[in-house]
Length: 235
Image 1 (cartoon, rainbow, N blue to C red):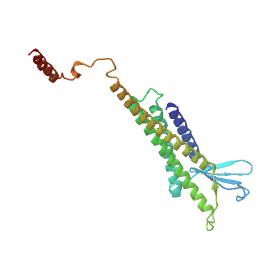
Image 2 (tube, rainbow, N blue to C red):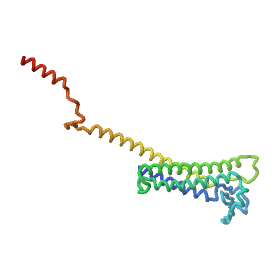
Image 3 (cartoon, one colour):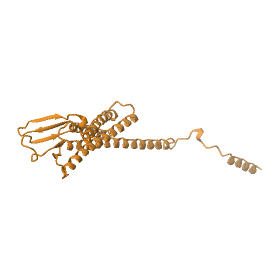
């Protein structure tokens, strides 16, 4: 199961990298070229900055003015993405400690617990990232298809797809890590039952006498009958 744990670790770390890239990206939503003015060919917005690019290729970004004037869904997405990064980092660290191919972490039982905890962290990281990207995408689509919304309409940015990919990788890595621990426990229990049964069967091999303490007591009834038979013969 070491190969499965290695694949789980690589999947979780790849998901963590994608989550970080999506968090720092400025392309969570973007305007199309047809709906923009000539001076600003396209407009990009992320969780931290607002960017505008022109036809020459220059891109100008400025951060959001204040956190108190931001809309609630942006603040929620920020918190979820930061939580996803923290959980993914702890999941990667604990996965390295709890893997069977490493020499740290203590006994096999402790390493199994650490690896299971790492898998849970990866799962929570993927859920947080998936929730954040889905919430942001829902807001974009609801505004885009709302006929009463007269402000600038945006489309889904590349950061959302990167975040969705990272969340799937984190969930996949956490699932494989937890599955490897469960399968290893079932195998260890099966080996223990097999060894116990084998030792019980082979404790008294064929052709070997049992110890004196385990021999059956002698049957004195037969000997008394033989003595009585001998007396009758001699009489």
